[in-house]
Length: 426
Image (cartoon, rainbow, N blue to C red; front, side, top):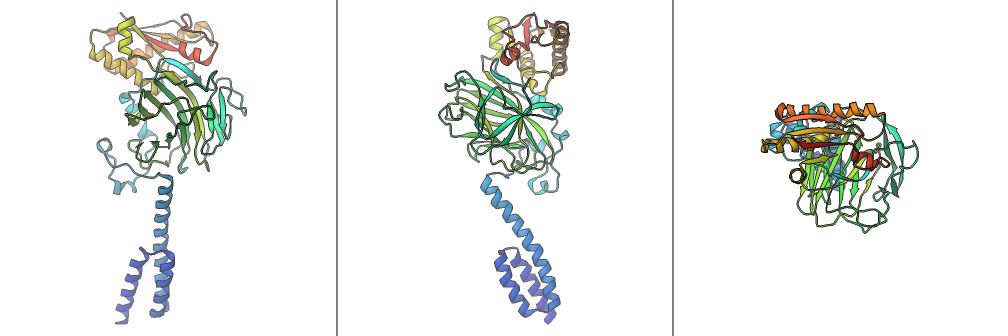
């Protein structure tokens, strides 16, 4: 009888331990001590410790996620089913997807971001001095300096609070310098296993323009605008705010009069039809910076233009700076696929179109090298389009090097404008 009573007491205690706080558990423990032998009490205490640890861990995680408005998991949708992502109750058994699983080689063919054609601001950190403040920016708050990281020049946010960061240094930054249609692109770095590392994008020039309340917050696998109800998680990610892989994320933002789209690498995370505010400028910073290193690079703001097809109908050609290449190479950067996919679809929808793909460079380097580089880049674009299904007899390629600049090469914006690809009807 006494043995059965002990079993009942043990079962009752374990049940209570999963539901009560540490204080309640201590009270129950005292009652158990009065009615059980010492050996049984020790067994109960061991089980109680485990139960309390588990309960407190869950409670701490729940409270932390609530305060930070992060940690929510996206419900399984059609896209994750297609990728064989496990159901939510199975995801805890799975490791965070590796870099290879999120490889742009597999998915950039669906990318539909097309950048603006007129460059307003460009900073690829060319010629910056390590340890100095970035020369093309103004300080909104905190400590920011140039650094060399991962084989490239970067902007390093050393100390930033909730409202600090940097804003482009323009001639008239107090005015509304963002047009009705614009795009913003940059790369930001996320360390592995750093919880809630995040970057903030404010659509006004801090300390110079009227504040725009809503901001865009970027986590390692998530974009959130304004509040927790407007957020998107990278397809297939197990967690929105922590990852087992360190990685650079390419962020692309498109604004059209009132609609906002946000892309992370090859995926569109947000599509907001009406943001109900007028973006006037740009400030980039971090929020609640407590751990981890924060770097950004390759920032570009461009003015949107008429659709490329409409431009072609008017001029018989269209020009794009949206096809980017590695420095001094003909290898196409993955984010260029938005523009290439657009042209491929255009030619698919209009089989009468044939294009000469013509490459152009800025004036940096030797003229002869730039000529060869432009030819190789134009050829690389045609080969990519052929691989996407366009017949080879509908395309040709040429290179003009630095011989036909669109504007001066005296500024980073001018150089970026001259590094272009033109599609000319033949």
